[in-house]
Length: 183
Image (cartoon, rainbow, N blue to C red; front, top):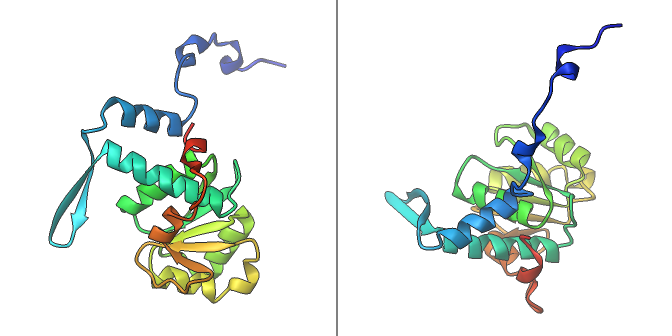
């Protein structure tokens, strides 16, 4: 039996010591280091909008606290069904700051496959970009018993299962849970 070259290689593990323990921690460090610097620039109507790291940090903390208030637990999957956009990045950062795990769903994925991906992942919450993504979930709701809430960016909330992004960001009303997220 021969040993592989990889198993005989000496690896210098000291290069990974003292690194940030998570992407969430790296994000918070960046917010703290450069709060007034531009973090993102994104299309807004016919022009571009810009936000600072401090503004992004506040929004991500609120969304992370909202996820926790909706029952999302550490390491639990949360799905994002959306095109690549600013709100997608915020959702992903909020999921990480809540200690959860992102499950991505391409917006072109068929309803049947969306149902399988979300069901198989065990996602409790789904960020759905618009009414087209919500329809895929609603049409198969009976097959998604684990999904407690759908949070929509541009879709139509129903006041029950589908809530707006703004409502999800303030779902923690009551004791300030922002201090328990993003560590």
